[in-house]
Length: 75
Image 1 (cartoon, one colour):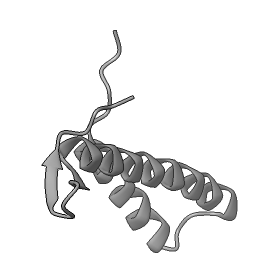
Image 2: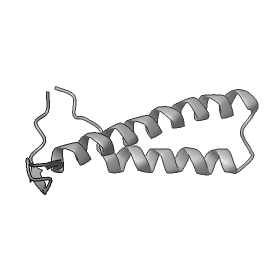
Image 3: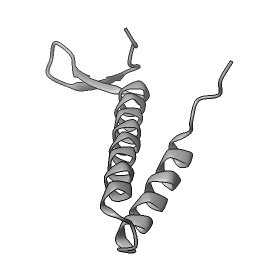
């Protein structure tokens, strides 16, 4: 079973890509490949953050209009 990439590992990889692209030493073809890879890492991080935020808590209002916390039920 393959181990899932952690948020921290994906973020570190994204930071490395940004540093390489900012160096200005990449040819156009390599820069485009790095950009594509960076976009994938960025999407992975954002999706993971969104999913984690939903799992932590979900605020809802009861019948009286008061906020209450409920655990997020993943569908």
